[in-house]
Length: 467
Ligand code: XMP
Image (cartoon, rainbow, N blue to C red; front, side, top):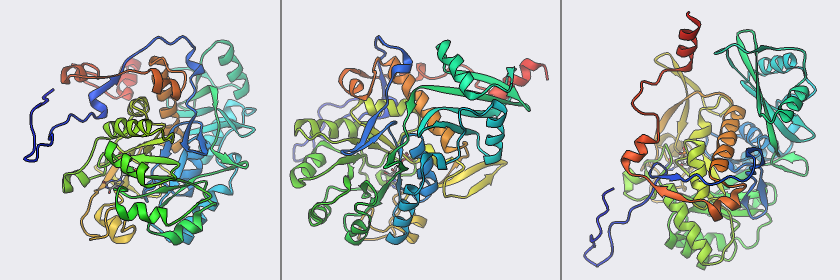
């Protein structure tokens, strides 16, 4: 890696500092003196809001509405309702989430037979449904095209399959029916939906400058999340101070460096969490347009250090650039408590965005909240109040990738596995014990599939069946 060591500006300040991004590092494996099923992903999103899994859906108008927020909450994460709408409508969206119990979202009961579970999947047009019992997610059933042969679906109940999996210390069983595979996954450690008083809950995005909206949402959503690209300004801090005490938790952000966090800590008495990152989102062009930004991994490392140095113990939310459960693990290992995702969920069928066909493939529209179309039609003060016409984000397409349940499941399973490999029983242990190491470019290419031609699983299934 090229690391110039002596570059200085005319005023003698260091110019070059190596900033690490997700692809520059790996988490080193460590002894795991516990079973993989024992891994706990329980964490905090803000001082008073606990999550069963460390995933938050980003407040973007092509990612989260009340529908998506309910599904994310059911799977133990939290959705942040965006603010590109009137305050009244945003409040209605929040209340809509809170009017639902976990059982109100599509799910299967453990008493159902495998055939009934399959019918329920078909009825809801979903590729995955959680198995719910007394407000707890015991596991998930998934359906996919038949790639291999498996045991035929029988009249056994999901409960019976779970019992067998528990006895055999396995976590999944595969069955076939109707040219499909039905996969039953047991969560040895249950996922608890994110609830308040028995109802699902969510967060709401706010601008520090919009006191009317904040007052309307305060006490309604358990946590309000500042939605500014650059929180660290005199105006934003002053606007927050002028608010006085709030009933809801307040997550500030975004901040991205040690010095910014230091500024916020020394100017604000109260904060219940911090949203960290600048310019790393998949749809961001802030760094291209303005030349300013910090890769999210580095931002987390630096902000977490500032919080530690000042003895401020609030959750850190890594925001932007999370593509895989592996990126999430790296962000958590670097000091985050939770990751905020746009792109991860943007391809889900349930997002409030249209499906677009392109060259025979299906995509979902996904746009930055600073993209030209978003700024012209919605939020204007996220970036700056000088002009609303300097776009800091792009309009884009992401491949359609199934349901929110499926994507959340993939991230939960991937993260739990990564934590086990890293020898961390929980996120606190990940923070205390886990070792991140830098890769050389050669190491990075060795640690991903290489020197092969990758083909889709369907091709393999076809080739092996002789078709
Ligand atoms: P991912 O990588 O998950 O990132 O798609 C989502 C995060 O990106 C931020 N965001 C933006 N940043 N211009 C930016 O510079 C934009 O138009 C924009 N829209 C969203 C935001 O922090 C989000 O959570």
